[in-house]
Length: 251
Image (tube, rainbow, N blue to C red; front, side, top):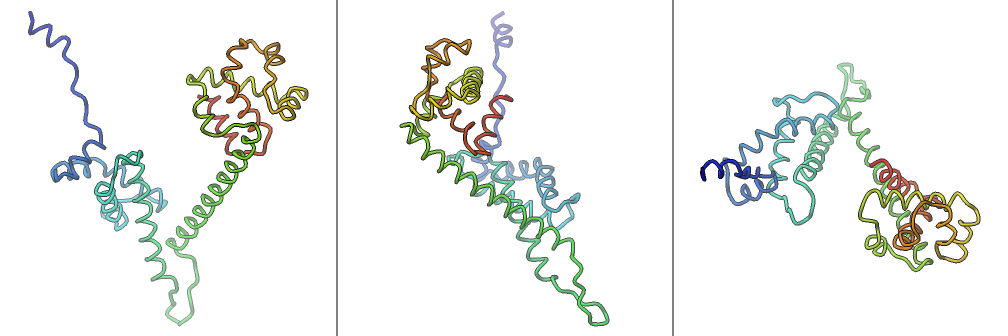
């Protein structure tokens, strides 16, 4: 009977995570390394394909580059940095494949026809490099805009005696509470008198909001800093910060 009860309440053995496996590999478990690489070959092929814009076979040179990069990611992975191995490996694989394509493209950049004329037709490698260069430029531009938004928003928060750390500490813990706070902020910015009170007095018009929303005064006061911050985002030209608000409402 005791044996039956033990079997009935036996907890299922926890499956080892990829990050836990990597720690063992870094300690010298070669068999686990081979097993992990074999298991993640589809991931490697998919990542390489996303760069090359075509189906990748295991016999392709690009796949070999991806395989080496995945192994490099395992060797260099540091869990204390807070990112998953797969996200780290994806970045490293793409970077190594891009480097390989660029080298190949440079060596074949100018080709000559048999009559001695230059064949300046764009090669597939050149097309990929051009597209990657544009994507890198686009990402850099987006990063710059995002940084500018954060700097500008931080300066605006200071005029309300607020900071990003205040927002982190005072952000509602539950999704429903965050959504309600955002809806309150939207009501505020839609009403000129409330909006003006916020901007001129540098404070939340709690009394007026209490009469317009189905939320207690205590709840509004508790989320005061968060509501102010969301209101300022909605009132400003903050493309990426507004995407954050949209994401919260859609979850």
